[in-house]
Length: 185
Image (cartoon, rainbow, N blue to C red; front, side, top):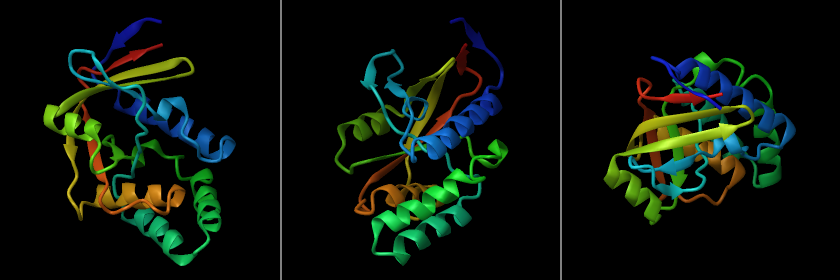
């Protein structure tokens, strides 16, 4: 597999992510695929985590957040909530890559050592691979504050799959440096 550096891998990455996420929703009942769970490396290349599930959120997440919140709050049956949200995600949710932010999000427990390491380091590398594609994204890392629209989007999206998710979780944002990103294919 050869490595290629380009000025902007943003669109190819988002297109690939939307494709693998739509496949995961339609064929794997929403279970994260390997390409949705990059290895996390520090800037020296040392592995901090072999896998971290990351989310894509729309550039304007309020509508999807409201949908997920409504589904979670409306039914006491987690299976019903999951099935309705999954149908939404299987439909056209991932059809327009340009509607998604390139800022990736991850949810970790409030006391997770990985969250502490990432926040204190302020930078990491997310190493994605699935099928014939692999992306290496150097990223800035920050914790999102309560009330941040992306934080709310991540929490309500995840509550569809885990209704017991507490408010106290850490939501981390990863902002790729597209000028130093690499694709391997």
